[in-house]
Length: 334
Image (cartoon, rainbow, N blue to C red; front, side, top):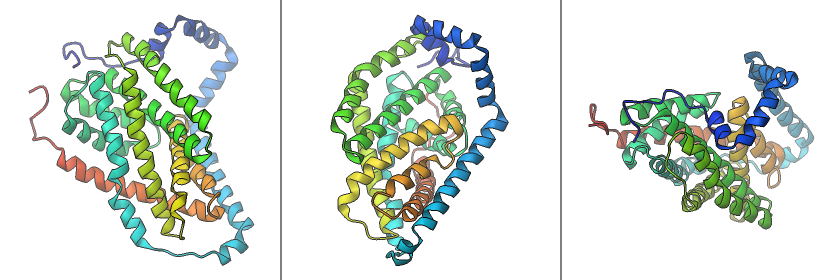
């Protein structure tokens, strides 16, 4: 548990990484002295460029969808469409199958690095802060977590490091699921798995030592990847249900849907930190769904899936947040 007499107000993970690996300081110095690199960095970080980039991504999404409809208009007219709300309702009801494993992962991570140890506390904070991910810019849900954890003596450095660890294993597990089930590149999937288990503990521990956090073990990485594998599998089933709300889809497509959902999820996490993630996940998922559905139908399913996930998360956040709430005035400090 963090020392309340010496709270950490800010954590610079870049500085921690540089301190852990001195060779990075050399490269950082070269980049800092390069005028072109600094000019590109200022351009990237400017509000005008970020807004323009989001507009460009959204415009590309609309152009992509329009071209898909135009090129496949004849197929769309003959396609067997339907709207069965029962599948959508079933997806909302079964959402915890995909949501609870991600909560467990956060609980294990934050407890492992010395944060709050209670499942009730970590579940409540995970739920209350998770909706911040729908706001452009990754900082909001991280700030929300830091705000909620301050009453439990958990430092900003612990929250930041745990979030970094969480996103790292999310991206890795999503790519692994895609390579394993989406494109069936078994050797490459195995290579990513072995590399993650072998090198992630060393990477995270080197950074964690600079901010005085507990060590990460290989078993932790295996457990997290396994739990997230269950989450992606449940997400694939939910995606299959949403697709069936529009058109019948064979149950044998579930492994493929699980794989492309992992890819779309991994891409969206990276895009969320870079450009706010506006439309990236839907664009990726819609394009990949084009392998089992007509392209416009795939885009429609991707958009509907985003809507259903948002509604489902909002509903279950309220339910789980209410079930795990603590009485006012009762904190871990007490």
